[in-house]
Amino acid sequence: MLLWCLFLMAAMMSSLRDVRVSSCDTNCADKPVFTPSSLVVKFGDPTSANCSVCELACVNNQYGWESPAGVTRKDGTTISWTVDSLTEWSVSSLCFYSDDAGHQCCTFLPVTVYQPPQKVSIRVVNLTGPMLEGRQYTLQCTVEHVAPVKDLRVTFYRGQTALGQPQSINSTVTKPVTQNFSVDISPGREEDGAQYWCEAKLELGPEGPKLPPVETSQNITATVHYQPHLEGSSHPDTIRVREGELLRLNCSAVANPPPTYTWTYPSGRREASHADVLTINSTTVSDEGKFTCSVVNLLGNVTKEFDVELQANPTGIIIGVVVVVVFVIVASGLVAYYCYRQKRMGGSNTLHSAVPTED
Image (cartoon, rainbow, N blue to C red):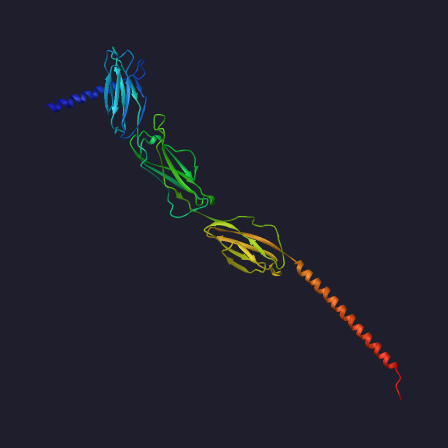
C-alpha cells in the first residue's frame, strides 16, 4: 500500500511539472536569466550554470530549476546548477517562477551534448580495380558515432584542395549516429596518383570548444588508367639531316598502363619497341621519307608522323672535289711527263740519223 501511495505521488508531481512546463510563458518582462546563456558539453564532462530568477516579481513566490540531471542550490533569487558528469543526450533545463496571480514565467537553457566522431573513413563505392579516365565514381565518407549530427560538417579533399562546400544534414537526433556522405568525381589522367580523404568537423558555435572537434579519414590513392596522350605535336615540322649523321626521333607519350611503340620506316619496315625514342646512328638514302610512331595500350592508341629530308653531306662533296682535283693534277703530270719523254726520244733519233757512217 505504501509503495502504491509513493507511486501516485510521483505521478502527480510529474504531471504538475509537465503542466508547469507546458503552460510556461517565455516572453514575460521579468524573466529568468541564465549565465551562460547556453551550454555546449562533451558527453561525460562536468558542467554548471547559474540562473537569476527575477528582479522583483518572484521574491515572495515559488521558483525553481528543472533538469533531468545534476543538483541545484538556491541563494536568494539565484539558483546554481552543477553536474559532475553529463550523461544525458537530451537535457531540457528551465528556470521558472510563479507570480502573485499564478502566472508562470520561465526561461529554457539550451544544452548541447556532443560526442566527436569515433572514426572517419573513406572509400570509392563499388570499385574493385583501377579507375578509368572520364568515368564517374562516388567517394563515400563514413562518420561513426557522432553527436549531434546536425552540427556535423564533412568536407572531401583531393590533396589539399576541397571538393566543393562542406556537407551537412538536417536532423533532430541528439544521440550518436553513424552517417554517410558522398561526392561524385570524374578523374582524368592528372588525378592518377592523387590522394583523396575527408574531414569531419563539429561546428558547435561560440559556446563550443575554441578548437572544433575534427577527425580525418585515411588517404586513398587513385589509380587512373587512361589511353596514350602525346607530349608534343602529332605532326612536327620536317626534320632535315645530312647523310651519315645521327637521327633521333622523339615520340614521348604518357599512358597508364604503360604503352608499347611501333615504328614504321619509310621503306615500310615495322619495329616494335618499349622505347619512345628511335635512334639511327648513321643515316642513309633509305632513311628519307615518312616515319610513323604508333603508341598503344589497352585503352587506345595515338600516332605521330615524322617527315625526314636527307641532305647531301658537304664533307663528302669536298672529298670528291679534292679527289677530282688530285686526279686532274696527277693525270696532267702524267701527260706532261709522257709528252716530255716522247719529245726527248724524238730528238735523240734525229741526232743519230745525222752522223755519217764510216765505209
